[in-house]
Image (cartoon, rainbow, N blue to C red):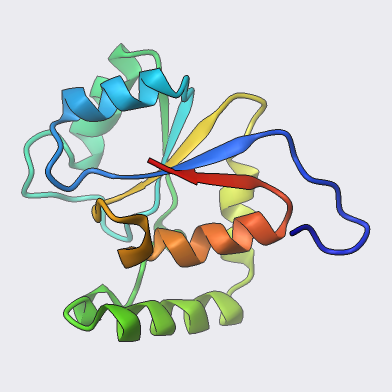
Length: 146
């Protein structure tokens, strides 16, 4: 819910992971939801998965008419703890409390058109996106995990 005195924004922010997806499948999903911009919230936008490293992904998105932005500060500096998902997410929550400007930076990338926030994990609840986007939702945006 928005804080007192804040209005709910009309925009929906989508959360998506690329785990077990191809770049073409990702783009098809983004098109289905009319996403105009993809915000990459990986600390290091590199991937062993073909086409998901920053330069290749941004190129494919541009060809599809979708803009790309990478926000390194929104990445999880505790991703090495991912074997213990709950600990990893707890550490990221602490990181965001100490760095509230990270949520501001993500919101600053929003425009009038639909946006999606990307990381690796397919399941929203198992990814730091869930913590990051909870902060965005507290500011009055609607979040939808796909």
